Amino acid sequence: MTYKGKFRVWRGDGEGGELQDYEVDVNEGEVVLDVIHRLQATQTPDLAVRWNCKAGKCGSCSAEINGKPKLMCMCRMNTFEEGETVTVTPMRTFPVIRDLVTDVSFNYTKAREIPSFTPPADLKPGEYRMQQVDVERSQEFRKCIECFLCQDTCHVIRDHEENKESFSGPRFLMRIAELDMHPLDAADRQHEAQDQHGLGFCNITKCCTEVCPEHIKITDNALIPMKERVADRKYDPIVWLGNKIRRRPS
Image 1 (cartoon, rainbow, N blue to C red):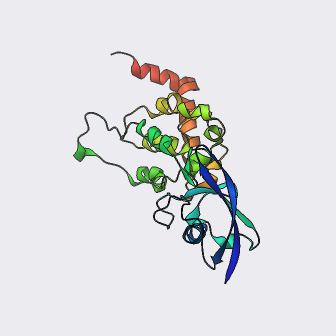
Image 2: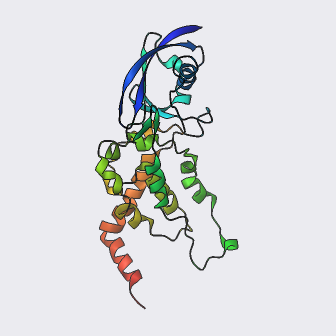
Image 3: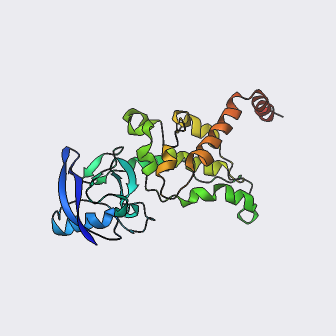
C-alpha cells in the first residue's frame, strides 16, 4: 500500500533556517529514513542527512521526529496516521551544520576527558581475573551505539548551553560508572564523576533512558548507583572515617 505522506523537514544551516513542507510517497513497511532518502532522490537532492547502517546499530541517523529524539532508521511509518504531518528536525542540543546534520564534536571532547581503564600498577597482564558476575554488572553499558540521543534529550545541556563545560551528560557518566564497577580499575572514578564531569547536575528524570534505542537503563543501573557511591564516600561518616584511616601514613 502506498500513500502520500506529509513531511515537514527543517532546512538550513548554522546561520538559520526554517521548516519546509513536502508530500512524498510512503510504502508499506518503511521507516522515516526510507522516506527521507526518497525525498532526496525525487525533490531535494541537496538535503543533508547523516546515516550509515540503516539497522539501528551505528547511531548516525539521530534526529528529532515530532519533537522526540529518535533514530530515523528505527522509527516506523506505520506508527503515524496517514494524514498526520511528520516533522523531522536536527538534534536541538548540538549546533546545526546543515539541514538534519549536527556537530556532535562536544561528545568526542568529553570522551577524551575520561581516563581509560587503569589497572593497579603492580598487576601484570596475565593476572587479570574477573568473575562473571562482575562482567555482567557493566556489560549492559557496552551496548551503547553512541547515537547521542540521551545527550540530546538531557535538559541539563539541552536547555543550558553554559553547562556543557562542566557537565559531560548521561552517555559519559555511564562510561565512568562502567569503569567504576570494574573490579580491576584503580582510578578514582567517583571523585572524577562528581568534580570533573558534573554528576551532581543530573536530577535523574530518566529522559535519557526513555530515548535509548538499545534500551539501556542508564538512570537506574548507572547514574543512580554512581550517585549513591559518591554520596556514601562524601557524606557517610563511617565511610569518611575509613578513608581517613586508610590514608593515614604508616
